[in-house]
Image (cartoon, rainbow, N blue to C red; front, side, top):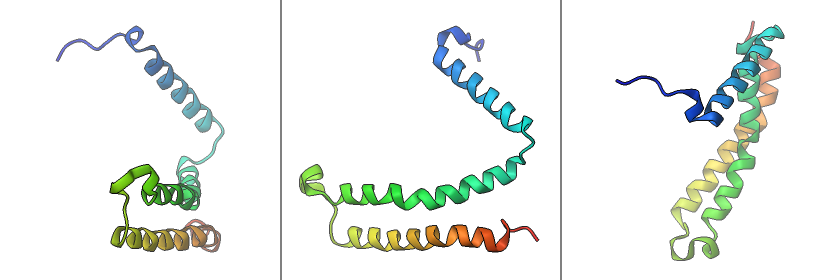
Length: 105
């Protein structure tokens, strides 16, 4: 194992780490509980999941995009079933978060 590379070799990488470190420090300095912040971000990502899944499902079934390799039949049906499951979870995430107080007693 050789010496570590110098940050000048990857300036964008070093800058990204520096910005993320400063951002993390700013979040910690606000006094916000990082676990609660993570729980809220997970709930909001579940709510946004159908918005990212529908375009992928539509493009996967578009024969103009994929020509002869577009999905059809069983994969499309399974994709629609999965979409229904995602929609149920997304619609129930926020009410469950409120009713359970994020799982706290």
